[in-house]
Length: 163
Image (cartoon, rainbow, N blue to C red; front, side):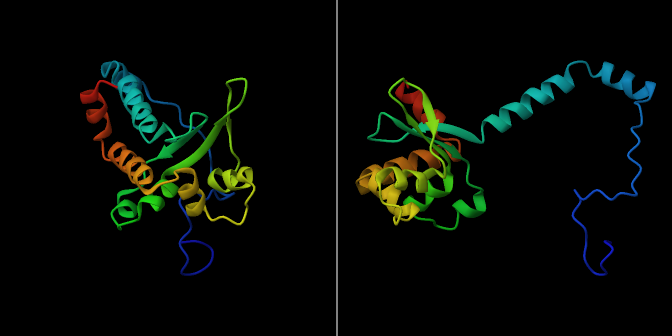
């Protein structure tokens, strides 16, 4: 319980009166880790794969010099029947543009930044996405590609197509 009655403190809150002494591993703990061999390393590699699998870079259809890094939308959000344009907006972690020297640069504020580059800061995020993906077929196909990746189907499709 936190100092304020009835309010539960968040688990990541550190109180000043907590003794932060580090307890060294016991010989038994070290022996157990040694006995497990490369399990800790395999676990770390697996965790690294899971983290890497949560984002992916996609070229923006119709644009050779624009790409976005998509994040996986949690199932609860994805399953609420969001529109295709909302799927693209929710999945976007960042948008990048290619400069004349062939270097990628992140557009600050993602789609809102793209609106600024377009010269119309009054556009909403969904309006910018609709403008950039200039027709509903392209928008639907791109949103479907993002969702297929999120649910694990995209790799199978790309493998079948030889991409």
